[in-house]
Length: 315
Image (cartoon, rainbow, N blue to C red; front, side, top):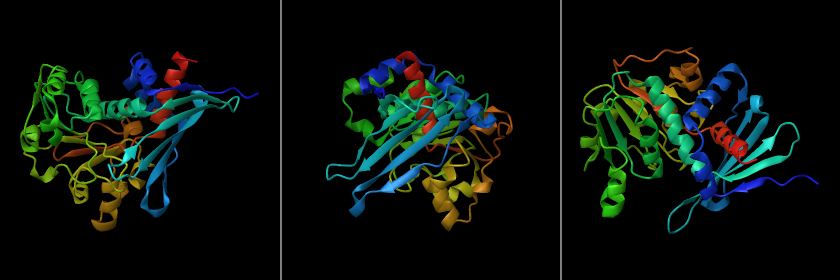
């Protein structure tokens, strides 16, 4: 009889991920991509009938580890607000049997934030001192966790429209994450003179306009899986040095890239480099004569690599 996979719930995934060096695993993954030892197909978007939502399948192969997998994430339209869930299935390339079925909520949070951290380490000026974060949800706070030690930050400013809705206890918990962290009451105050700006929202439309910033900065964006979601105006790509997590798949899914190509004359060939390029030193750290933009869409390989790390801890 075929073996059944281990099923890992969200709480178990959180506990196991705490034992894993997530940025190291992702750096290794992107180096494997650069060396041809991993495969990342384009993500697959399937719409539900009658506008009821959609689901995205994220696929990937880790040949060195002998595993492949798929993360599937539905976006379910409901009157009380959209519901997004995700599960990752890890499969053996040797036996063809399922190894692990993991609630991907914690994987998604960790890999999203840690991928941005890998990009910040590769792209941000070495002397960067001022960090801005837009967003206050789990993903935003995970971004802070992974980047707080990457530079000698002199200030960390965080803004979110939702801050006013948080309880005093929740606000105190956020403030306790780093002594350099200041919660501010406007986007403008957050990004003023920032060297690095991390956009960590679920917004479907622009969050900031890079043309309004006082100096060139690194801007990172994750967005959400709402159709064509984007956190910067699509036309702004023409004025920035653009990087992404994986150039073979990101331009076909990132909302601002799709819109910029269709409406503003932007060409995906303008992408300077991706994380495999940067980590293998095929592409060098950029200069800052203008803004640098890093876009991550989330790769199936990232989830699969973390699921594989969990499986190694919990076979």
